[in-house]
Length: 265
Image (cartoon, rainbow, N blue to C red; front, top):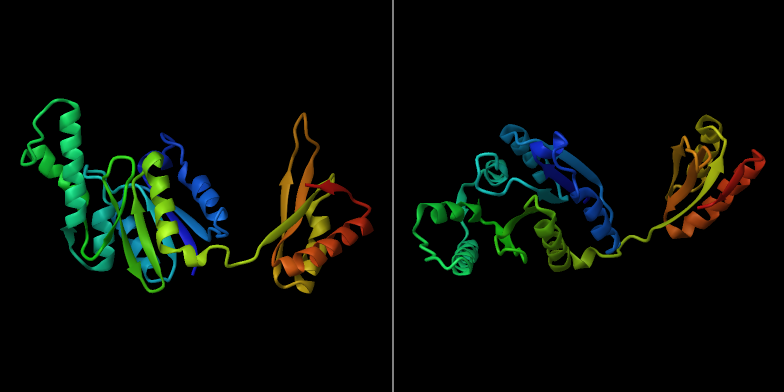
């Protein structure tokens, strides 16, 4: 099982909107001792969205999908999820109640008759049409819910593209459906800044540390530097805490052998 993100919208791929979901998802998962396994960005292309969902639904992954669950012509995610599952869309009874409550509240705020049978309000109910058998995800911002579908040990969880709505909804999914997965994998990371060294020079050392300690990964993040920072590489180890400390010690001994200049991060 891995945790993945699908972030949907032409406006993100074109640069018209800046994605805020990736960094927030990493933050929310990290706070619960969980890690992101993969992420995909997709435009508003129904065939591509359906294919991606069909592929990821064949796994046990936990997937959060952001965007495209509205009821305008460029919103395709609800329909694509149903197509990927091979089931029809159906108006969810709880979603209908919540959407109608929102319509009434909006009408009251503007001093108007809610007229639930008006065409525009009937159209709003389409936002509650989810793949048959789906469960709702509460939306604390405006009551218009998202939806979840479960498959195997995992599930797909569909939320709006608006961060103010989507991020509390992701938190609700994690805290309601997956608390048993919190802090299940022990994880530690230790690193140093190595100055004026080449990655090619350090690669044999990195390979030797990984070979000696199979439960850790060695990472190397080079920086060209700027007016305030010298050129350096952040070099470190991450993984099983029981092996991180001795692996890090071996890494430092190797750097000493190179007479490399370094300091702790």
